[in-house]
Length: 455
Image (cartoon, rainbow, N blue to C red):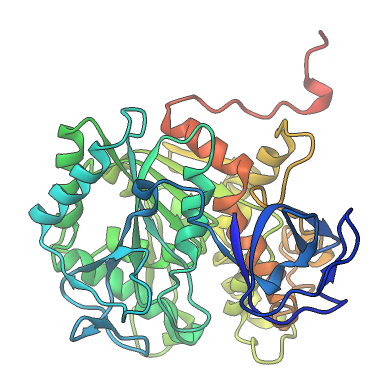
């Protein structure tokens, strides 16, 4: 994989390879990365001559090594734009969709044009029809929260490389769905759910209905993958309010990766939770993922008990986020309990609480179990990526005690925690697992070692 050095290196950021020391790389130098390794939590990339470069000093071109067809994808813009340029600052979602080709042309402003359902669907279908018959699956990918306002386009090649470079890949194309996910968390939930409701009320599912139909006619399938805070938008999209309906059977599969939404969204009939940010003056939240089964044939939920960021997100609801100290008083009203994350707990709480009724038809997968079953004896972090996160605070939080979750930790360990959070859709074992679901292979439940048959 090709990369470019983004800073002048020194003895702290470059290590010698088997051929001995070489001059330090300087900013702008192009390198060929062949593998990677972890030193504790620090990621080092290894160049073709064996030199090791610290990970944050290299910008990888994740499109490198792919064919021209595999490099070409689409950006679906559900963001306000001005003269074709998406607005980066805070702005409401538009009443129509726009698109751009990815990757963007170098040295040119990033521009989008209005998306016309029939024309666009025909173009996407023609593009994927040029690929081998086995490459039959098209993804719509909805990203998560944007810490720093932007288009988050850096996630596209990471996703593309994770799947399209996999030896068992059956994905034909990725339609990257950009939406206004930024802002202070106190208002982001309200706004994100509202944008989802607005999406459906404005009839924007039509774009995907037309595309799904054309892809089916060509022997292809449309699938949806949603990451993290994108599930707040998704909740609004499938619960648009009285007088509005969602379509049926658009997607073959829906993959919910690290869903940053209450675990109660998958109980029978969903749940109505009080909106703590509008405690005295506004609507409460209606969370209900049951309609997803109407939208797709199969719904897959991937959760990770070691995803620290999702515990932090739950703790946002205890009303004391500024001091990063735990205040048990709101929890006596059930706030943190109600908003515990689906992406942290999956269906585990339902197994322990007989008063809860889990909606049937959802498939749950614990990412740590998938990692344990991986047969690769020495996974390469360049393609694998997953580094486990062992934290005492998370252990207590899984039993309802959030006193060990420190919000400030997310600032000091942002790089590691964000990468760990992203690995839920990019590490090799999870990618292989998703590809098996696309192929219709039934998931094999994990058999505890003490129950495994002796052969």
